[in-house]
Length: 316
Image (cartoon, rainbow, N blue to C red; front, top):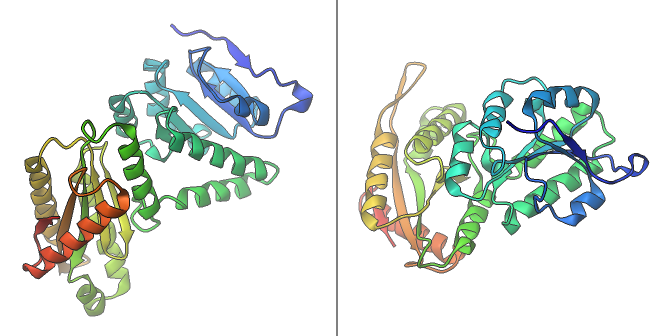
């Protein structure tokens, strides 16, 4: 049973900054940077049941959920958040120490743009960046603030497919490389280019092409684990980041699965469409010790797959 105690930051009421962050945690020693206390009004809260009451009397700019200390209560919050008229409109940051806990976050359909290990410099950077933007826009109307949140989201996600974009894909690869030594952290990058997509655009129209891209994005998501990443790199090019790969056979199995799912027919308003993909694969650390080397190797391998007849994959 968690405590009902609500702890406010020591900042005097008259001096509080306009940005208010509710920190959902049971850990009174949560290592939040001191600069957060200086620049933001932090409210430490540990009881999900009384959170709605708090939001009725306080304008909340963001939630910070410490999933490490709030296990069952945290899951309850994640489960009900998307259906709550107030909670669903407030940006959420989730921190957890272990990958399996972050995987649970994804299972609750919480976008992991806001999730990560609090000790990660990248996660802290995103949080600080977002709160800085929120501070700048705190005096605006709710509509203006919601528009700003959408713009911050668009900086990392593709508007057509809803997938992470090139920037977020690169950041996740960098974060994976920094997480541990190459010996302990093996992953694969798959670089996909759709075969014959231009012909579909020319034969039908761009609206049909956009619909097809969104369908491809959905099928790619279905081919990977929730802890992996699929991104739209640009145009008809997609990237997949496969985490914790033990051997090439696993990558091959997933690549065959991707080719099979993408190659199945698409039906749109009586139209029967088919599309295939060429895939280039690079492995970390075997094919490079930087994102630039890995993505270049995967890109070159993708062109090799096209030269061999398309609709297949090649390793770097």
